[in-house]
Image (cartoon, rainbow, N blue to C red):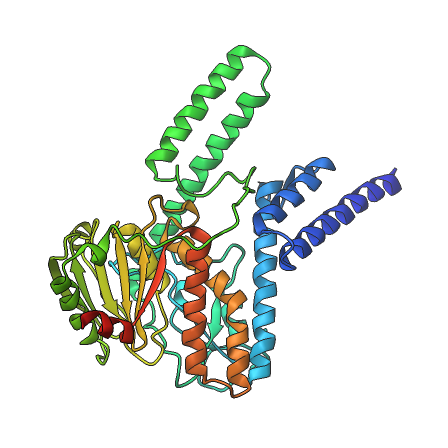
Amino acid sequence: MQRAEYAVLRRTNDQYRQIIFDAQVYANTGAGTVEKAVDMATHDFLSRGIDCIEYKNGARHTISDYADMYIRTAERRANLMGEGRKRQEWGVGLVIVNRRGTMTGGNHGRACPQCIPWLGKVLVDDVYSGGKPDGVHPLLSDAMAAGFLHPRCRDKPTTYFPGISSAPDPATRREIRDAVEAEKEESRENYVQRQAEKFQRLEKYSLDPENRQKYAARAGEWKEAERGLGKSDGRKSKESTSRKRKKPTAPEWNRDVGPETWTAKQRKAMWSAEWGTTGKGLEEARLYDAKGKRLFCKKGDDKEVRFTDDEIKQMRGGVLTHNHPGPVYGCFSPHDINMLRRGKLSEMRCVTPKGVFRIQRPEKWPRAIGSLEKVTDVYYNISNNIETPFFDRARMGEISFLDADNMAQEATVRELCKQFGIPFDFESWDSIREAIK
């Protein structure tokens, strides 16, 4: 009897390992999306009669929830290992934890309490890059021991090039306090969604009409609570995460809105103001309404311009232009893209020494990038897959690391816009000067 019990448990354990391994390889090799890998693992688990996972502390999770967590964690670990190997080739052992949660507009986002103490800090990557302790920077291994890079962590370290990369300011006490509150709020939202899904399942699989009616009413109550929390257009049901996606195509630029509809005098005034910001060391933003009237001009620091809620309300349908100072001017940041959504702008413009980058708000904003956290996650996932060839060229001496960084950022934004139907355009200073004539 004991031998039979051991065989059953051993077989379950073997099946669990094989299913997770297959799904992990499916996602990491690029054969399918993470969502498809989660669905594949969930299907295989349920086909074998495994519908939940229970931890030592008694916490029990649905198999779809566990598969989602494990595969995303494995994918991130694979990315970190690949980036670490590249850093070893470049001879760079430092990483920086960028600010995922701080955005223009004063919202401190959803950086988790376990990770926010490390935001803005430069670390020695002794885990993936083989970095050696230098006595100046803390170790990545110590940060991980303290909770950094925990399961489902949205924060991640990126390569830090001394003298080129700029380190953001460390998190303030207010940001840490806000992160704790945001974590609690997200937990409440997740609980409400789980309850809604629970009663939907009970309604679907109940046979008694009275029970089905009762569960349908309860599901409706939780769905209403979910909409009240702003989650109705948020994350997808974990039980059906895969979606058929159309092949992304570059959307056409809409010339019926924005500066194309302004007078030549108004466009010239905007271009002149933009050119005047290219040599400045601080960010400067100007907001124009749909008819080309300037509403306000606001200065920030060398990293961002912060807007009040009243200023963001004025942005609806307008054009916001701002410069990116510093040697790494890049292109649009996740914060810029999110402000296009949040401010309901018709156009966002980014002024650089190279020219002016432009993006337009699509008619319907994609849910997959419907918040700052989602935009940031998508942005850096694309960046991780795009940036390597540029830095390889820099390592071989073909271009500078500075140029590699700027080119990688532009390629990332172009790909993101292509995937999500955001019109993207670029105006060189030569073409602008020609238009002014």
